Amino acid sequence: MHGTVVKYKFDGQVCKLLLCSIEHVDLLWDLSCDTLHMFCSEMKAYLVLFLFLLVIFTSNVSASSQSKSSIPQLTQKKRPDNETIYRVSKQLCWGCIAESLEFLFRHNLVRAAKWELPLMWDFQLEQYARWWAGQRKEDCKLQHSFPENDFKLGENIYWGSGSAWTPSDAVRAWSDEEKYYTYATNTCVPGQMCGHYTQIVWKSTKRIGCARVVCDDGDVFMTCNYDPVGNYVGERPY
Image 1: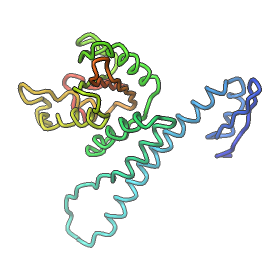
Image 2 (image 1 turned 90 degrees about the vertical axis):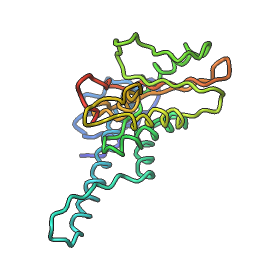
Image 3 (image 1 turned 60 degrees about the vertical axis):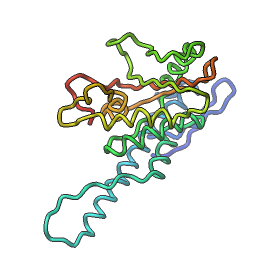
Image 4 (image 1 turned 45 degrees about the vertical axis):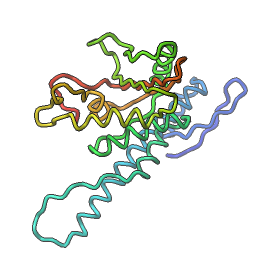
């Protein structure tokens, strides 16, 4: 049976779990409510990704079948519209506050332009990002949480003068580096940075967590962490 709602009682609380398969029941009896909800969230995220790809594939097949031309032509795939990307991002950011969803949505817009799968929000990465943003609240210094060339996670950071800067501003600044990236040579324009952009669209990156803080001096510091890390030397982002 699929799609079965099962109720469990742990410590006087009733947990509801939408199982992928009733066969998992015996394995889940000893798990806590938090673990079961995490299981549900992960399976839901993967289902959203599958449906996202299915919709896009179906659209492309439909468009191809309607073509009346008998001469083979190279056609460019249609990028998903912003509303679709927003809905997918919202599903992949289950339980997020508005600021987190804004971070995720803006990232997935950039990735969709290169036909990369949308990122999923990760609360452990968010917790790490919030910790580092808290460290920078006092001085608002534009500083990474990892030593140079020793990154355990991908990381983009942003500083803005004044308190009005938003997640959209940060992602826009990072993604604008696309104009400095040359795919043919897989390099940045000399004297310019493009690593923030390539991390956003890195093909193997799946999860993201970000944070924004207004510093003691009234300026804004934002940071995003990515897993798996991108920007491997000698590899292209997509």
